[in-house]
Image (cartoon, rainbow, N blue to C red):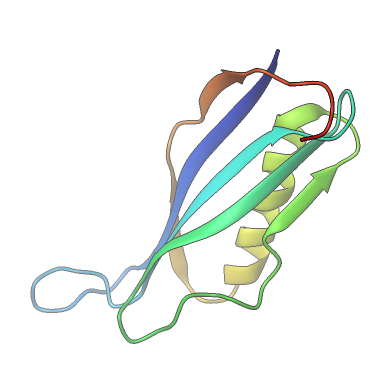
Length: 110
């Protein structure tokens, strides 16, 4: 039995429009789970929403492999990547609580 963890990460501008909505907004789902061998892990970043004047990020790295440390290590790599990607954009970051879900690791290829 392994584990999978996930969280939602939002970046938004401090200034908003007349309705109070942020002028720039980016929302990501980060999921980390077991890797191919004991102790390894893989995390992915999925773009959920982007302010309508921008397009989703389809060119940045979205898969992170941690050779040890399990899902928390891969999650940390992915979150550092998002912070570095948005660095200098003067955005505020909000991260949801991490959810942990047990997963069954099946042996053998399918």
